[in-house]
Structure formats: structure tokens, C-alpha cells
Length: 167
Image (cartoon, rainbow, N blue to C red; front, side):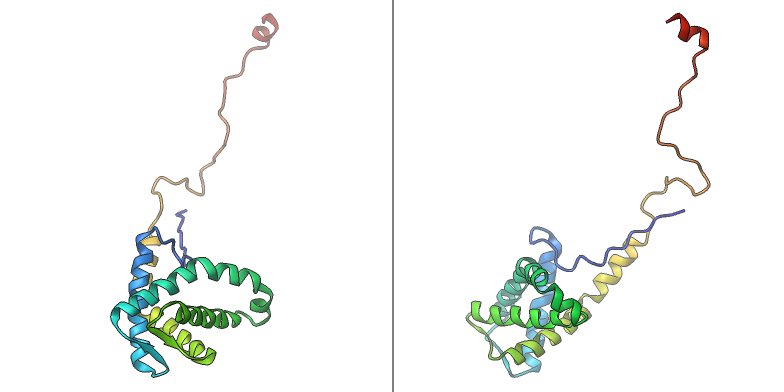
């Protein structure tokens, strides 16, 4: 039997890993696209988009798990829809932290976060497909077959009763 490992729950990687910086770049592209699509978000330059994407990604890595833990009952009662409000809060907080990134109201941040999530998903789709294909390959070719017996102890030779009595 071959073992397969699929891990799709790694959506907010550590800032130390290289995948984090790829996600920041994808996030900055999606912030730019969303800001051109809607007029309720103002971004002055591509540099501002990168800085705001970095702030959003850092808040998603550090603040979002805390907010999800504190609001777990609301997330469960709303079947996960309350996470949209957490995303909107993170967008508003980013708007307050980055000077050239403006989102005026909570409803604008709510819709902006939904659009960014959709664009982010579409931009990351090829990378996710590649990760799934990579994880679907067998982990170890020398794995124990299902029919084989496996014991966690080592067999030893039995001593004769005479040898035991002589000792």
C-alpha cells in the first residue's frame, strides 16, 4: 500500500519561508487588479501595493490566527462566514497602517477582501495544482506492503532450560 500526503491547509506560511514572499507578490498583484476594478480603493503606486500586500500578509500570519481563536464561536455559528468580517477588519487595519492605501468604509473593505480572495485564488491556482501533483507521488518506495507482517520487537533465540538452571 502506498501512502500519499496531501496538505492544503498551509495558507499562511511563515515569513521565513520563500513561499511567503511568493504569496506577497501574488497578493500585491491582486491588490493592484482589485484597485483598478473598483474606485472605492485608492493605491498610489505599485510600491504601495507591495507594501500593503506585505502588511496584509503579515497580519494574516500573526493577527488572523488570534482573531480566529477569539471569534471561534461566531465562526462556527455562521458556518465560517464570519471569517469574511475578519478579512475586512484586516483590510481596514492595513488601510490605517499604510499611508497611500485607502479604504474608506467597512463595507468597502468587506467587498475588497472578497475580490482580493477570488483574484488570489485564481493567481495561486497553478501553484496549488503543482503542489497537489507533487504530494500525490509516493512518499517512500520501500514502505511495508499491506500483506507483510511487521513486529516492533526483535526476536531472540530461546535458551535451553538446562542453561538457565546452570546460571
